[in-house]
Amino acid sequence: QVQLVESGGGVVQPGRSLRLSCAASGFTFSSYAMHWVRQAPGKGLEWVAVISYDGSNKYYADSVKGRFTFSRDNSKNTLYLQMNSLRAEDTAVYYCARDSNFRITIFGVVIIGSFDYWGQGTLVTVSS
Amino acid sequence: DIVMTQTPLSLSVTPGQPASISCKSSQSLLHSDGKTYLYWYLQKPGQSPQLLIYEVSNQFSGVPDRFSGSGSGTDFTLKISRVEAEDVGVYYCMQSIQLPPTFGGGTKVEIK
Image (cartoon, rainbow over all chains, first blue to last red; front, top):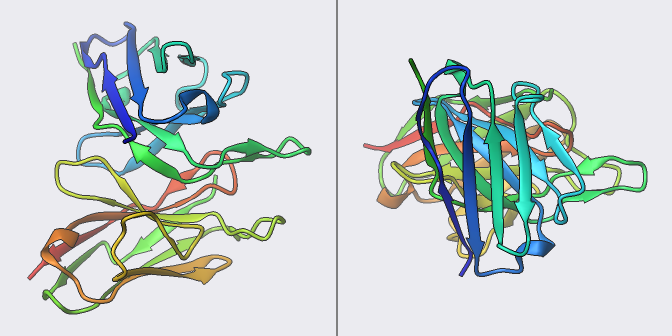
């Protein structure tokens, strides 16, 4: 069965860095685009970033652009989210999720599919 | 960004009774490919979100038949025909026709 397991969360001071990982199993990882979605304590869901199946295309929310870097290692079935210059407002549970039907049209339009499987999440707390 | 507005914010339902959640988008979610990119998720207490409905009205694998989705353009509805205790949680709609994908604010469903 599809499994996504996040790790790497913790408490970090503002301005510092943290790297999250998401280990995938139970499906052909290299065939799927993947996402990070976060949820601040007591708040709703916020999309963070997507990476295409081969890592060649990445898109970020404006709130993290230039600070976060999304990558993947298909040989290890693992995603990474490098988070730099962390801010208090980055405090959240970070989920990785699989995209059921990501594609880029011939016109360069990005189509996101459903997030059909999610991990259990890892908590990042940015505090001094 | 496309704004997704859900109503009501919360719902208290007697077991066995129906429930309905509305989701409105600030732009049409109908793509030129004919698909409408609207999804419904449920986040049960203490759990990660789970997919219920994709492309307006298609049930994801394993989702009970009591969940159904409908709508078009900018107006969408999730219906639970007979609420059960296990349906408690926060329901979110999401659009993905345009980056960034955006979620509604959520509707909390409780059992009376």
